[in-house]
Every structure is written in structure tokens, then in C-alpha cells.
Length: 367
Image (cartoon, rainbow, N blue to C red; front, side):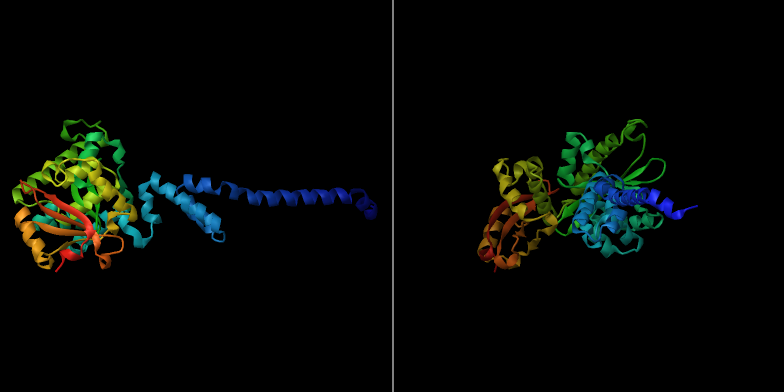
């Protein structure tokens, strides 16, 4: 066979074929990058691999962060894995898990950092019951999910907001045979806290076993609200502290929830009894400087630290049970700029109501 003759005859054809194959392989390697953002947003397990593959590109990293934010909105449970450890106060599921950790460790001090259920606060014996129950349970994060409040009817959503705050969340914990624990979680100035617990099960409240989850939860919201009112009346003690009450007022203002703001402030017996739209506007504007009420410094000031002339005046106007609560502005107490809230028990002593509120330089009010 004459090789030289064959090369002259077919050499150019072979070279073109090899070049075509190389171009095809190069193009196929570039194709996945064009679909990266879609796969990260739509496939829960894809976010991790996309992030690893795009570490060298700043723009690709931003796409991954965006994809994770979208995924968190669709599936709240995914927040546990993707949220930074130092930022757990944004995650209601994490708040419940931290509470469980404290209970299983028999650590009451840590428990009260993550939970403040009024019945437990008023009756310490109930804390022992919670500790015993938690010790018997295997806590698995995949059994928890945040319930979508928008599935509730308007009346139930409003009652939830008035009872636990406009930004309160309901965490469902799956038990056995279709039963679920309900954990009510809300934000105060000192972080997210579990503030109530109850249990629902299929067929409860004579609704039938085919009743939807939102129907069962709506009834339980009403029952827990009634239980808290009964507890406050029996103990002659509000279930929310003055600082917690003010925290929920700022929640409502941030959510622009006028009805909840009015109700929590004391309704017809409170300082905002006129129920004017502009009453809340000031505090809505105030909250634009803060991402959450958790970032607002709200604290009580003892009467001994209040200037005598004001202390005497407040005693005359509001009786002896008033409390002075300060919400400091974004510059902190160094500037003395903030809002003071005079809080006192309502007529039935089941809640604290706003007696007066003023935003100003507060230096003259202190001794």
C-alpha cells in the first residue's frame, strides 16, 4: 500500500474531522453554565453543587445566593441547612429546636432565653413536665415546618396577630398518627421566642377526620387565646410583660397592621383610643431604620431613675402601677433620642395598656 499516496488523498479530510470533534466537545462543556440559576432554584439539593462549582466567579456566587433565597421562601425547612449559625434569630424552627435542646439538657436558664410560655412562667411545675416530655422524644429537624398563615381565614389571622404579634409564626411538629404539636413563635427585642404550645390531631373539635389542617389550627388559635385570657384573669397578671407588649406594637407598626396596633395598645382604654390612622404612622416610619424589632433596644427604666417631677406627675395621672419603657433610636441611648411608653395594667388586669407615648430627647426624664 502506498501510504504517501493515501495521505495526500485523505489527509485534509481527516484533519477537518478531528477539528469538528474538538469543537463539539468544547461547546458541550460550556452548556451547563447557561442553566445554572434555574437548577439551583428549582432543585433543593442542587444549591450545594452549584455553589461549589462557582467559587471562582463573583457573579455566579451572587446567583447562588439568590437561588437559595428563593428556595427558602418555598420551603422554610431548608433554612436550617442554609442559614448561618450566627443568625438563628430569624428562623422560627431554629427557635423551637434551641428550646428543645435546653429542655433535654435540663437547663432552665437556657430555656427562658428561647421560650416564654406564660403558663410555664407562672407555674414552674409545668417546666418540669416539659423537661420530662422532651427527654422522651427524639427531636428530628425534618419533622418541623412553618405553617403558611395565608391559608387561615381573615378572622383567624387577625386573632393570631393580636394574641402573638403581627409577625408571629406557627411551627408544626409532626408526631405520630397524624398528630402535630403547634409551637407559636414571635419576635421580641431579645430575640425570637416560643410563646405558646398546643397539640392538634385528626378529628379534633368534632370537625371530622377529613378536616383540613388550617381548620384545626384556626380552632386552636381561638382556644389558646381563650386559655391565655383565662390564665391572666386567674393569676391577675398580664401574660405579656410591658417590654413584650411594646415589642408587639413595633411589630404591628412595621407590618402596617393598624387593627393589631390598636388592639395591643389597649383599644378603647388605651392612649390611642381615638383609633386614628396617623397614630401608628410615626412608629412605622421609625421601624424603617430597623430590620426587625429584635434590633430595637427596648428596656424598662426603674422609677428611681426617673426625675422626681415626672415621677410625681405620672403617679397622679396613672396610679402607682405604671412602668416606664424606653425604645431607643438607631443611635442608641448615648443620644437620648427615643420613645418612652408609659405602660400600666388594664381595667381587668389581664394585659398592659399604653397610657402615654412620646418620642423626643429623653435626657430630662432621667435623674
